[in-house]
Length: 122
Image (tube, rainbow, N blue to C red; front, top):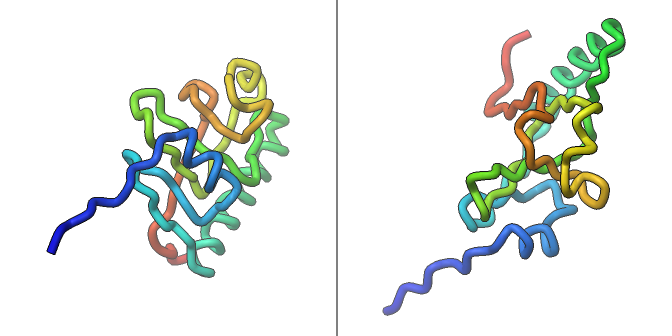
C-alpha cells in the first residue's frame, strides 16, 4: 500500500476554488473544513452585534464585514476566516486585495479579530 499525501494548495488556488465558500480555510496549504454549528453562529452573531452597537454609539470609523479572509504576511499558503473581525475603515485603502476581494493582508487594518470554539454561558 502506498500513501499519497493530500495536494497542498497555494493561496491563489484556494481563492479561485474556495474563496466564496465560508465553509473552508487554508492553513499551511491544507484545506480545512470549518463549517460552524448553530450555537457557534449564535455566539459569533451576538458578539458582532454587541461590538457593532458600541461602534455606532461611539461614532467610530470601524466596520464589521459580513465575510472576510485574513492572509497573514508570513504565511504564503494560509487564508483564515475569523468569526468576527473589526476593521479600521481609514486603513482599507492600504489593503492590496480589498477592492477586488474581502481579504485583509495588513495587521494594522484589524482592530479586533476573533474565532470561537464553543458556546459561552450568557
